[in-house]
Image 1 (cartoon, helix red, strand yellow):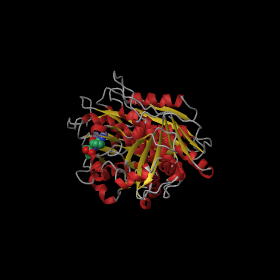
Image 2 (cartoon, rainbow, N blue to C red):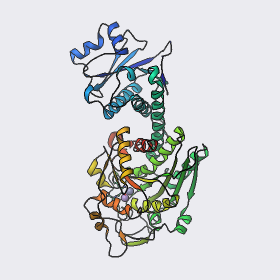
Image 3 (cartoon, rainbow, N blue to C red):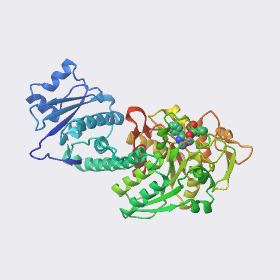
Image 4 (cartoon, helix red, strand yellow):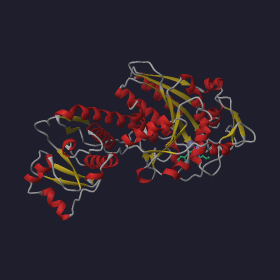
Length: 494
Ligand code: BES
Ligand code: MN
Ligand code: ZN
């Protein structure tokens, strides 16, 4: 699908769906007013009969109205005009996009930027979210062989009109939205792939393929022997029980200026987490293929960088390993020495994410980064605390955290800060090593971050726990592409 932000629609449009966004006050502007006037008040009548009251995200498809070239008119509710902000717009745009791709329309159109502007957002952001949601709605996972492949959308063109004065801002916003959605698709594809396919080696090959396809990205892969010589025994302890060798993937995106210290994204890439010897219960264990979604979001953000080509340096480091039980697997009680020199008592082999991340974070130090953000499906405790709505952000640098919180409001990709107070650190005391890899039953998301903080003392660092946000369970099971919007917004804001 091609998204066009344009001052004027093409003269003839066939097989189209016109989207009309309406606030619950029922005031009609632009195309809505014209259609209503020429169709015997078809829209106003709906409001008076309560068939459509424009609650946020409500949709209704009407056919064969006058006053438009489009065969279909899709009404979408925006709710209360006075309180409308990012989350409402995203909800409405997502509902519009989902309904649109379910129609057989080939063309979509809307004049929402002029007739239903969300004042709290600005034209560029409104266009960004609309484009992102449209692009997202057309996503279908198609990387596994299937005899009955899922139908893809018939949508080919989308036109969004804008005034001359706002055309440039709107186009720029839409372009950004498309780039973010493309990054999200990369993250979703990697997350959704079966764990027998998406191995640490597969992820390394993916990075190589991405680097081969463009000039702005280069990549280096460290294998287990390289990691051995760097002393990454925490990371290696996780992959010991697996037939799949671990990989450490370093991706380097350089904008035109090629100067300045990089922002580094570090992703947890546990391609399958059985828990190891501290094995998990078998119910829903398949979902632990999503334990590489932090890594997938790093790939996704890199893809968005390639699309947007900003003048900034961004590195992605992915610590990829599979956590399996085996005769060679790490045992509870094992003590390993990390690349930082700190020894770790592995009290629970299921707390493996922090083990792969700590060595990747130490590895990041040499690049003298301006900021480091790690992204990880790290704890079930985070899901208990924040559900599937917000990712947790915890770190040692309040400026980086504040920038992430700001990017969270702009992108609508929620994150919420949890504290990293010293009082939590004693939960990681070990009688046999510098630090234990678990902190007991309380405050699990925080003690996991406390563990990581032991390896980031020389970095401006923030950690994102995306255990609740990176994928959905149940009937909609699948990767969400989060937190790619948050990461890309954070980078572009700099
Ligand atoms: N990958 C899991 C975290 C997870 C669990 C994410 C369920 C989403 C849903 C992680 O490796 C893990 O197993 N964490 C343990 C840590 C514990 C042993 C301290 C957890 O959260 O139970
Ligand atoms: Mn685990
Ligand atoms: Zn895990």
